[in-house]
Image (cartoon, rainbow, N blue to C red; front, side, top):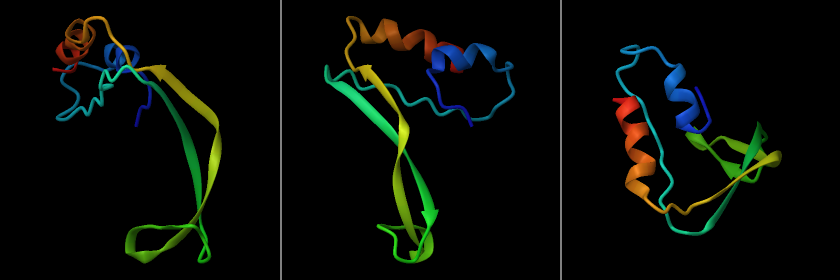
Length: 86
């Protein structure tokens, strides 16, 4: 699994190697976006419920990802990424 800007990852992938590529583009809302990964560990007294009702304790990760969800020309931003994915 890759987690990065698809503009950086897609050119490194071999042509025809995949049946499916999931590209999750930003929405272009104009808002500043922030995301912090969570670390989860199985814990019967945890704060989250997962698959099969199992309980997990979550801890915020150290690294935060930020980006401005704003584009002057959204189609021009997205089109090259979709063409490469295809």
